Image 1 (cartoon, rainbow, N blue to C red):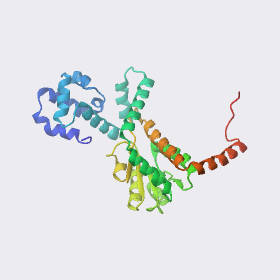
Image 2 (image 1 turned 135 degrees about the vertical axis):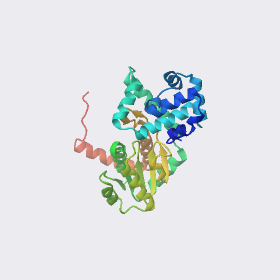
Image 3 (image 1 turned 90 degrees about the vertical axis):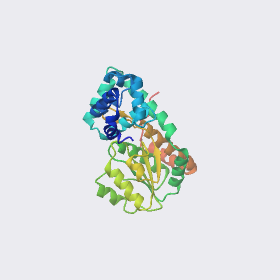
Image 4 (image 1 turned 45 degrees about the vertical axis):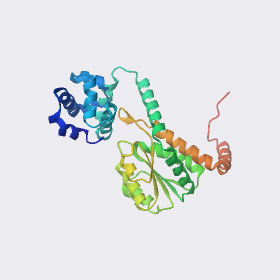
Length: 287
């Protein structure tokens, strides 16, 4: 229902009461603002009671107001331009402390991720990574930072990790031309979802590879073209989406692979420490 709330309202509009019509008209005109209002605030804005707002959500087919609000927020995240996002968040923030608001939002996304992430699927992904011929990592635009981080750590643990450079879609597919059933492809995709990432993941799935999506919802484009989905919640913060929870899921993957490969990993890092020491890779802190 996240994508059809406006058409649902339009369809049922003739059956609504006067108060419900006020709510409907406001949402259709300003769903970007309504999405971040509490039921109480939305009611005050349009001149109805909080209970009327809650009943309105139920009549639309939602379990309650939070479910309807989530549907509106998904529309906002997927459809608004960066400039529109700035306006929404500026209205939402008002005179609030930005640091507190962002930290609180990040803590909530971590909590939601802990509840949403399927541990059995997570374990299956780790096992498949350990037995893969090659692990390909795909992430472009804002997700490129996550893909680079995952590649940086996995390449020291395993010998068969490749980061797909985020060029044009044709150049990305050239890097994936040899992908097959023995391979694992990890695609990282968050709103606004990159079409290049989804096309590359779909290409790999059709080639028979195990495709793992790290994304925010089961309905996300990347989830629809994947073998396994690791959910990591994300929330809109001004022109960017918070990547705190996705980074935590990636950290968990790295730690799990490290534990599976502990003996080889110890030898690898002993050699790396010698290299880092000899070539002064890190600055020493003075006592």
